[in-house]
Amino acid sequence: GEQVEQLPSILRVQEGSSASINCSYEDSASNYFPWYKQEPGENPKLIIDIRSNMERKQIQELIVLLDKKAKRFSLHITDTQPGDSAMYFCAATGTGYQNFYFGKGTSLTVIP
Amino acid sequence: NAGVIQTPRHKVTGKGQEATLWCEPISGHSAVFWYRQTIVQGLEFLTYFRNQAPIDDSGMPKERFSAQMPNQSHSTLKIQSTQPQDSAVYLCASSLDSQNTLYFGAGTRLSVL
Image (tube, rainbow over all chains, first blue to last red; front, side):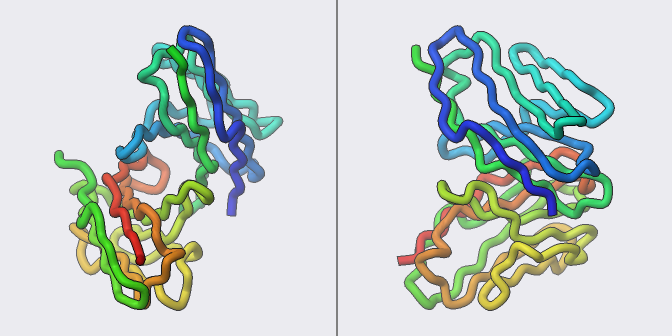
């Protein structure tokens, strides 16, 4: 199956700065890349996703970039707030896949 | 829409006992997934059903874990002879189909003493 690597595993940033999380995948057949945010004690929730027909997508402070050639995608959170502190997971799946493959997660802490 | 419902929220078992975890997917969703979450391994895929049929159970430890989906409104994950290393949060998720957004339940925290 697909392998998704996610870095860094731990990220601490000052409030108001940007945070970036990077993921890579192996199978060029992957074509859908969602990002999930999990707050302590809560279930993971979709925050933004990108499909392979796009290179960039933005929803408010969240930007996702996809580089299909390099098989990398990334999440950028601009103007971070304490409420952005959480665990973030990237995932990949594709046509014919039976499953979503998740990265191991990034624990983001925004320092006030 | 109540979302994906998982019961119980917490379960404590003694080593060697059986644990059954329940999941009610969102009505109308055809795909149901089970994941296990630990700090070390993150989100580990266990098994996946589509239209109630088991499609992929490649993540399931073969000897003690089993999953079923007897009808479209619920799925169960059964762990026989639980071991301390089975302690984790077990998450169920559903989606309209395998290429759509996954909606996770709140999870069942299993503690094996």
